[in-house]
Each structure stands twice: as structure tokens, then as C-alpha cells.
Image (cartoon, rainbow, N blue to C red; front, side, top):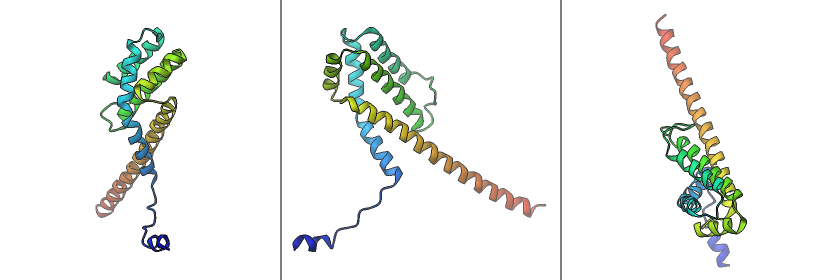
Length: 158
């Protein structure tokens, strides 16, 4: 009886927007970044990790700190997402080249699970798509506003 009484006063669930879902996943991925950094540092120092795997980690790290990017860093969020994408792909490649026992040891030491890479790569993809769509909508809205205002001025001054 008390459950029925209490349920009368519960708030209905707030509908979640696409933005909410994307940002929630992005925050989860962002919280893992220090773990990825630990994983990279540990793998580079471990002689049991093959040289090509260590090289992939170094190249991914160099891309992150390099001023030359596919998407310039001054573009908010998207400029950092490409860095994250390259770093994650480099680490995933490195892990695939590393013997399983060593790979699992490194993941465990860093506090990561193998599926975290797939989750975080999907998050980078989905966040990028969402931001590009949102940017396109804003740009289209801005262009419509400019066209309306320009059209009004042209009609006033023939």
C-alpha cells in the first residue's frame, strides 16, 4: 500500500535527448583518458611488447602532441576528438600485436577492459557525427537569418 501511495508523487522520467546520451557516453570515455595514458606509458617501456607495437603507441602519442592535425585543435571538441581517435587506434593496433598474456596484464594494470576500446571508438564516432550535424543545423539557421535580413534590406532600398 505504501508503494502505491509513494508512486503517486513520483516525477515522470525526463525524456533524454540525443545530446544527453552522446554527452553522457563522452564523459564516460573522457574519464578513461588517464588510464589510456598509463597503458601507453607502460607498453612503451615493456620489452615484451613488440617493437612495431611500441612504435604505434609512440606515433599515436606524437600525433596527439603535434601541432599538425587532420582537424585543427582550435575547432572546439572536434579538434580534440581526432587526437583521441588516433591515440585509441594506435593503442588498439599495439595491443593486437602484443602477446595475449602481456596484453591482458597491461590492460589490467591500467584498469581497462578490451571492450573499452570499441566503446570509446564508437563514442568518438557518434560524438563527431552529432557535433557535425549540430554545426550544420546552426550554420543553416544562421544563413537563413542572413538571407531574411538581407532580403528585407534589398526590398527597402530598390
